[in-house]
Image (cartoon, rainbow, N blue to C red):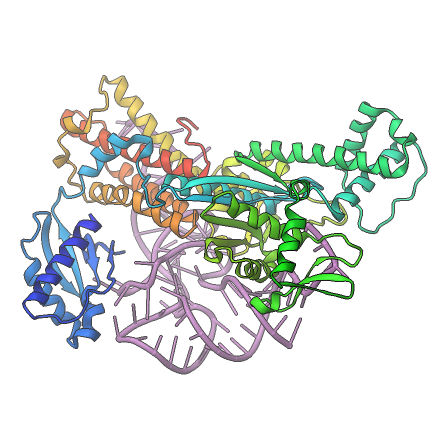
Length: 554
RNA sequence: GCGCCCGUAGUUCAAUGGAUAGAGCGUCGGACUUCGAAUCCGAAUGGUGGGGGUUCGAAUCCCUCCGGGCGCGCCA
């Protein structure tokens, strides 16, 4: 509908210009759904945008356009010039009805579009080191990344979800040593557990017990290097398996697990470094190899190879991002915790320096999550190994509630996550508000079925009976779903879907309280049932985008 | 000190640069013999941290100050 109005405006503008009423170009105006019903069904700001270039009063321009617009399209009931120069469109009562037919025809695909033009996109997220279980912060990244991937796929992008595994380097060494020590301790060997750099979490004892089950005390007989190597492998694969399980519990499934180690096996990292040297992007100093990041907008030059010859994480990351583009992704989205934000200029500098498509990479920073219980902060310290894991949170509050909690907020603001609030099955918890609407609609349809009324096809109902204000508003809202999805995908803001669903069900619940769907009037019942199916489909599609279930009963 | 993010109602959060800034919770008062009260209806509550600017129009963009968070490793 918005497109229809936009086209008409453009046509009218051209006509006016041919008559010499306007001289300039048509600006990039907006057709929007006004917040207030008093401003019509759709509003256009074109007159205000033309004011300057045409050197006329906005309302005067609006007047000229409105005269031409009269009678230009049968759906237009009435036009009004309002406020500073808005042109408000009032549409015929039945202007929106056809969307119900569209929903019915498209079903689970209603809301999808081809805005993405099949563009290949990678969303890389979570990518937590396999050194310990996921915590609540990873959960936020997981919910966001997964929902974004779903929304973008629905909007016509060809999306791949990837998890980057840092399975090599210092932290892995530390992990291996930590496990080795726990293993020795469990076998009653007196060993000191140094504070420095090692992982103290309880989970390492579990893994050590597992190791004993598999290897008994054989690892004790090995030379230390070999033993630690084995422990590293063992711990990493156990933890990674745990991470995968946790994510599955959370409804997140990756298409691809990319190992940092393979970048070395394939020679990508050394090759990349050679290339950089050849291009004059690197220099040696104090025994290390540096990237001239300051030439490309970063505040410091960055080390790629340490004085002792080992590469840094950054070196891997350069090769990794080169690899992403080499695999044909036209757009790459990285989702990181906000504590990594200082890393962004470095990566941007690399893309610029290496001639990679820098505008094709976007980094979304997810802000911290403050975990609370009854409003009080829950102590979280990775150092001491005391923290609430994502799994514990999911088991306590449920995947749906946790996801919805994350996905109703923008990612760039910190978030308070109160376990007790998330757990309450009540008004305080918006996920139930939305799910309840879905269950309620299912129940209505079932009720009608008991009375022998089956949902009618759109073609067989008299949609003109849907004349209540609230029906009209709900249908309008339903018609906005596709553009909402597209906007959400293009802006990479899945929370818009959650907000939309809450608004939609708010309208539904209010309507429900005032109007009966199933009545003795068969024709009206059929029409309203069709409206119910429309809402139900949009709720299902919307919740699916968030990875939240749409229960038929609660 | 420098850099990035945030600051909206008692509270948790919304608001493609648009019209009178909206919801939930909480508070107060109402609504179940009728499709599910995990619901609905009504009332009170802020003028968007302060101050400047750009714009026909600013919570949104720019500058500055204040407050909070996070960074500023040859860690990841």
